[in-house]
Amino acid sequence: MINLPKKPPPSLMVFLGIPSALLFSYYCFLKVGFNLSDFKENLENRYLVTDPLFNPKWSWAIENASEALVETIQIAILASIVGCFVALPLSFYASQTTNQNKVSYFLYKSFLNLVRTIPDLFWAMMFTVAVGLGPFAGVLALVMFSLAIMGKLLSETIDSIDPGPLEAAKSSGASHNQSVFTSALPQVLPNFTAYFLYIFELCIRASVILGLVGAGGVGRIIETQRIFLRFDRISPIIVLILLVVILIEQFSVWLRRRIL
Amino acid sequence: MSIPKQPIQQRILKYTITALIVVGSIWSASGLEITLEKILKAPEQIAILVGAMFPLDLSAEAIERILPKVAESLFIAWAGTVIGALFSFPIAFLAANNVAVNYISETTKQILNGIRAFPELILAFVFLPITGLGALTGTLAIGIHSIGTLGKLSSEVIEGIDEGPLEAIKSSGGSKINELLFGVVPQVMPTITSYWLYRFEINLRASAVLGVVGAGGVGAELINQLRFRDFPRAGTVLVATVVLVLTVDTISAAIRRRIIKGRSVKV
Image: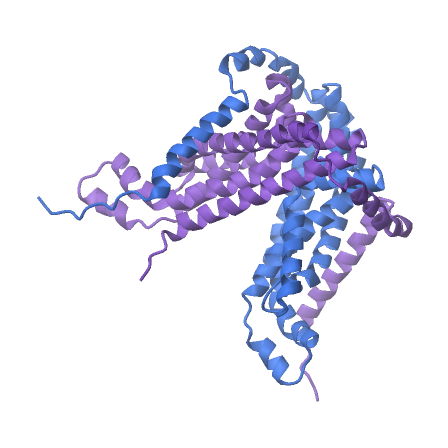
């Protein structure tokens, strides 16, 4: 028999953490009303959904949804472009490599974090109230959405750039802005392009649901048909959306590979 | 001073991208009928809305109404994550090409891709007539979407393991089950657990939104207060959500760091 070294005792976190996680899970399932018998009973209702869901009305969908689908894409294009280009200067202020001022660094960083905590649909709801129903509210909501993601990704990339070129520019007499523009910006531009395409994909996905709160796009049609339980009209629209999303994703993946 | 010119290919690429961006934004802006007038008016309108939200409605009645809704979002997110974690864990082994046979891993991966393609909100309103208005619908929608995302992430973790321990177990006579249990699981568990927590953070944001279609959580409260023009109360909902999300993000990030980096040892 070999003398095995003793296994270290589990840490306090494992000791307390795992049981409390299990307890919390149990409590959550209780709270959300996870009840199998009710579920079985309601499953009888599924024909209300599944039957029309699998009998799609294609001609209706193509006729009525294609215009809204184009609107969805336009919202995503505009919002991702505006959001990313607004985020570009902000990210330099939200990184310690390019912003030595602790106070303004902290302010910019917290601003980006705050924008990121509010879900995209919450932005959409607020903008529909502020500027009225329609795609403009949707664009504004997605601008905030893409601004937050780009700000986080890009500022973290700027944190990890090579400070050498910045110092070189400074030591040859460039002002702070000049050195950032000539030395830091070119280092992160490839990342910026990659993130931009990624955010554009996210925006396409997010813009589909904007219409549920009246912020334009194809979600509007889904919402009205859902109220009337016309799942035979919804299912072809969902398939169309999936097709467009997949096509655009493939295009963006191809473009990313070309550029980088 | 003569600076070398950029190669022609790079310049062409640069101009094409610029043109694409300009044409794209003009096409979109004109299609959406976004005018300069609208853009100039927007900041003022937003300021009015934000102004109307403060001071927040902190009356006992409002808090009594909003807090349970916020908590419900938390419960939905956690329960959904648990469903996702429980189901995605075995599925991840089937989808990993170094554990499962090739054709099984390929099919499983395609199924996971299919699941991931549907946003939670779309799943939620397909479930609505079956599970009714309420938290259960949101939980199922989030759970199923999480199976797709967690399954993909976990299977990639499994594919990236060190094969050494597996060979050691095999050469000392261990069965296939032994290999998985003592070779794969201990290697992947920390990363996969941290992915579960990460997914929980994302699910919390998703569950906050789900109320919009009536699938439980704080989203319904926000949309109702905005519709009834009760802006101070809407502000309370918003602030409560932000506080919850920030708290959960901070705690979860700390636990994730602890799981991945281990206990800090004093030297």
